[in-house]
Length: 247
Image (cartoon, rainbow, N blue to C red; front, side):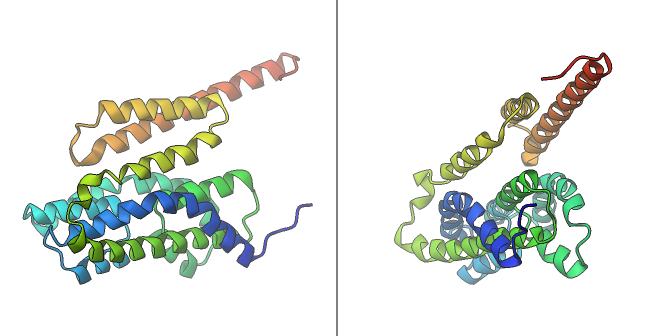
């Protein structure tokens, strides 16, 4: 029987698993900080947004809407739509955290970002033990959270020194990091099909308003992946019932 990792070990492993994603998020956080003042947000308000909201894409969109003079209900509604993908993340993780008390589930829900979901999902995929898995989640969340707030602060300070940083294209590092993290875990045809379909749909639906194309792409990818998985399972069952050995 394999040894069960302690809470401290799980916490450190969660932070370590998130490090590659943190590297990709660094320019993203810095750019957000540099955008704050030109968009009409004070340095303190920019830091407060990163501390309280902690949602990169929503914060960027909120900045754009603030700069355009949009009303508060419009900003709230738009960021809500953009973050609908978190419903998919939550649906995936609920079976893994539903046994935890409320004092754990509330902070973990707040810390659910794209990066933490990627790291934590891999943890649950590779290990069935849930005894201290929430510490892994916490380690990933706090590593990402502290990095995001720190980078926002750095961006706010650098914004006045390098006003043209927004045009450097550093945000591309985020996409490259995610691709590098996801590809090694694509181990079967349903996974590959899900990713390919989601990518194609994301490109095809890029013009949809409020980033709805992202949600459509995710749902299509999930539908194709799950359908192929069920089809494979059905074929395996048919082979076993026919007395043949499956390889």
